[in-house]
Picture 1 (spheres, rainbow, N blue to C red):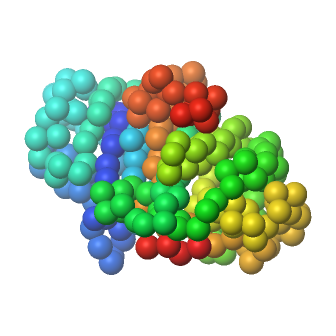
Picture 2 (picture 1 turned 180 degrees about the vertical axis):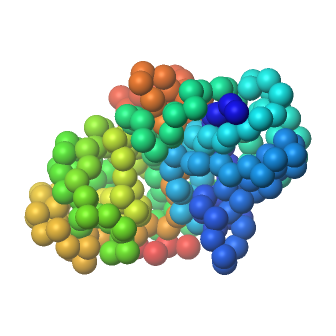
Length: 271
């Protein structure tokens, strides 16, 4: 028995998130079906991040166990021939049998994309959230600075979050404007249910002037979901990549190539 690790990219528009559920098709379900057909075994993948309905990924990680004789590096090419065009396995490799994508020390990288323009762009509707009102990205960055570090993020998670431990560490949180597009780029050791989207919704409220940047500390201290902003729409969010023990998966390499916050700074509305 071998354990195979997959790096998976997908457009989440047509899926009810990663995790199998009764109300619609999911990324996990499709991978299980196609890998089972490929290997002739009953395959059940384990994902690193259970992304929500409509959320995208460039570098989510999954593992599965198999007795197949297919070489580890060939699984990506073989299963891609069976997958729909909005799901792609970027890389496949063998890992130790006990390696688990959710129990390893890692850093997760997300981006939230906002189209800040008076009129929406139909070509961006599946990958950005449209905000027609002017946003002050400098105030958004000032507010974001209060969120970096280790905090209790109870105010920034869905009330249905199934955990008593709401302490997380954000390593970086950058707000970058490029013309009419604003990127909220965040990295951390883990994120609560809806946490990134609630952070994005709260920073948008700051950008519109409803909150002052320094109020973010009060929202954190309140430990009350109703104190933070609304949950931003899912289509603006992408899991860019996951870093394990100094190795960045390919999705994160796409993000890092020729980009930096310093360079980029020079470079239906629900809020």
